[in-house]
Image 1 (cartoon, rainbow, N blue to C red):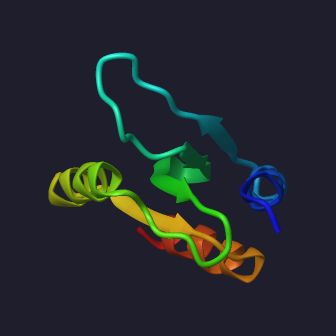
Image 2 (cartoon, rainbow, N blue to C red; image 1 turned 90 degrees about the vertical axis):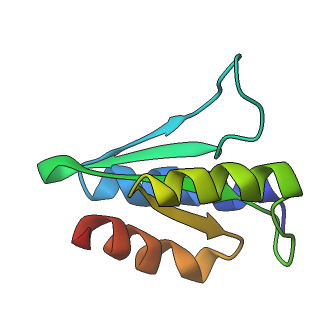
Length: 93
């Protein structure tokens, strides 16, 4: 399965919950997560999308760690069956 299939499913699942799943790019900073997830009631999280079994590159790990230290909800998604749990975690934060 390709990363883009997981990403498309994640976007649809976020929309079903009444949220937005925005593509995140930062011209001034490499390695940022692929998506910013905005859910009702002000719940926000960052998600790095990966193909099944793949892991974030070292620079991506650094950026994810920086966001976590700032108190942000940060997740890595590499399987379709993780989507619901990740969205639940963002909504609970």
